[in-house]
Length: 133
Image: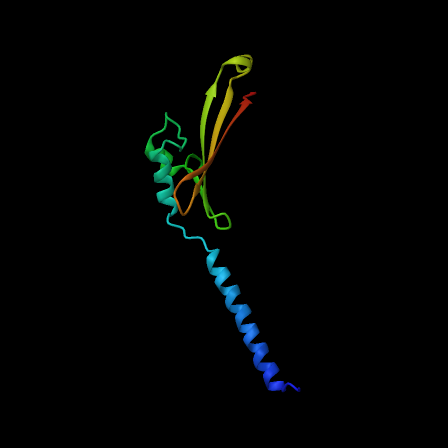
């Protein structure tokens, strides 16, 4: 029994159509539905007390100085928001009393799920550097 070239061509087109349709469906399933923007993420974390700010500075000074503001990034692959904030202070305790004091930098990185608005992880770090002058 001989198959015609037209039958072969129609079958090939049908198979290719099926493959591209399923690839398109799989691509739509992996999309991230972001329900937040950067301002709402910062507001959410401020309400939970997860933004570090210098207590001795006014809100006006924090708003006009970029290094005091939280850094917000959206990770599209993970569908998460990453917010990092820092708090600066000085101390003369411990080994710092033997020098001209130390600068203390506290950092907090918070990862928030963009779809559910839940906090996934929190990373806290402290860095102490002596002031030699």
